[in-house]
Length: 286
Ligand SMILES: CC(=O)CC(=O)SCCNC(=O)CCNC(=O)[C@H](O)C(C)(C)COP(=O)(O)OP(=O)(O)OC[C@H]1O[C@@H](n2cnc3c(N)ncnc32)[C@H](O)[C@@H]1OP(=O)(O)O
Image (cartoon, rainbow, N blue to C red; front, side, top):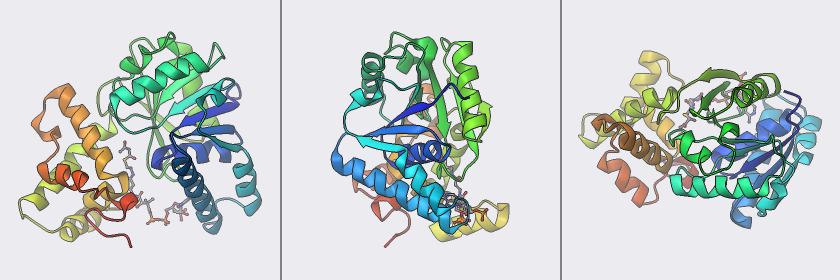
């Protein structure tokens, strides 16, 4: 919706950089923050690389990519969000860290009608809303990786999110970003991860038990069910630390054993084998 002109993105990791990129490509002025300069530089490089990939694929022109870069400002100072109409938080999947971000945003963002969104996939939106003085303006806007490619957004109002916030967020996601919106209640995992995560964990348990190899499990789902990538390559794409965090939130909420992260996943995360972003997970990415 045209009323959202200035967007802030907290976090320039895999998801935050994708969220910043799609906004800049849609003509929106974007401020991106990170906790450190190296993390910020890595986010900027990720966005520039993705824009170039888009150019090579014929999705945008070189001039569009340059214009998108000019709409992006990178800073480690959260106070740059004072004039933002919408802020999307996309930091690591840790409840306390997210609560702190929302508490800070509440202090820093001056616009009374600003929307505070989280890209969380599993942490209750209600808890983030209650960290602010404006829970009616707090909502989940959950994107999918790679953000410039996948057309879906899950919209997740909490019990206290106002109708106007829901309508503005939905109009922004559809009309400005061109995404398709589905709505979910505020339950850990929402719609997609509630189905996807137990499937990914089951594939990891298959390897753990010696049942089948990663290559055969992936090939089975790619060739047998026409998934674009099998569950282990997809786990590597999402990030094993992220899957662990989502699984823990879902297990915490429902106490469903299928949501509990298997020991192999825990050990891989302990070892820093986080998937594509760290260079090694179930596969190696030299
Ligand atoms: C965990 C959570 O909370 C939420 C999540 O994110 S869950 C994870 C969800 N993600 C998935 O399930 C991903 C599943 N995998 C896929 O969809 C695909 O394998 C993939 C898109 C990742 C790669 O597909 P691919 O065919 O091997 O790659 P590629 O051909 O390069 O790209 C696919 C399309 O995107 C386009 N594209 C790629 N990068 C792009 C970019 N940076 N900008 C614009 N377009 C891009 C390509 O041009 C191509 O478009 P066409 O189909 O029109 O030709």
